[in-house]
Amino acid sequence: MTRIAIVEGDGIGHEVIPVAQRVLELLHPEYKYFPVDVGYGRWEQTGCPCADGDISALKTADAILFGAITTPPMKDYQSVVLRIRKALDLYANLRPVKGEGFDIMIVRENTEGMYSGIEEIGPDRSTTLRVVSRKGTERIAQAAIRCARQRLGKLTIGHKANVLKSDVFFRDICIAEAQKAGVTYNDKYIDALGLDILQHPGAYDVIVTTNIFGDILSDVSSYLVGGLGLVPSANIGDRYALFEPVHGSAPDIAGKNIANPIATLRSAAMLLAHLGDKEGAARIESAISSVLSSGIRTRDIGGSTGTREFGGAVLRLLG
Image (cartoon, rainbow, N blue to C red):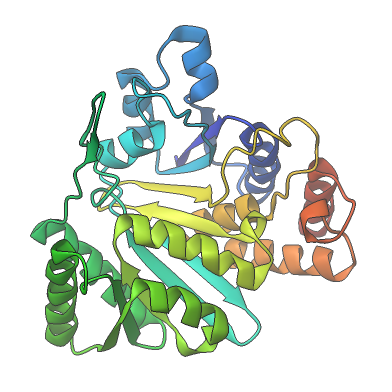
């Protein structure tokens, strides 16, 4: 039996995940869905945002549908997202950005870089260690190359090698892997790439970059399609897979039934495609497009429809 872990998390995760779960249950009632409670809300109740047992539960799933997590700026609070990514070794973060005239896949290294979690905070200085390893770089480059081969075959390497020696290391390994694979590639400084992707999105196919740069670049790129409420992502490892919207927990709008569930629905579509149901994934995307074309939209994209109501419209089309 296919097992799907459902993690609502915090904030608007409690609103958008149930919408996507109902869609998955409609398309695949034979799957086993089970909840895993982690996040800031869990920490407030128990003092532990993510226990060892939660990680063990996630490891029993064939795929994970993940909402949004609040990470407070507290020096004694461990990021739940970083812990899960490391524990499940979800090293490839795939963030598609697709619109009229462009179809970009940003492949972000997901377990090291500036988000390695190796930090010290003192009274006069704080330090964050940026880790870029050969193993980590080779495997994210190889993941990006696999994506490129399934698409247009063009790879762009985003880096800041003119300033950071660790990015010289990253760039050179990515180039070596691309050359070995015979994939067409180029490389760009990440700041110039951030501007050019907005000006000429159709020029890009697959972009591979480090952890923090990929995080920022994908958020910037969401402008091309209408904002963070529309952009999904996949976190893929050799054994486990987690799918989540790019947006955060948005505590300022949580509980108001105004959050956009499209990013989460598209994440659910990526989950189905990963499990081999490409037809189901396409049906979700088609239903989203049809609902939008009918004029039903949430507030962030110019409408007045609520989270649940938008989800209901998608469900009616699918049903």
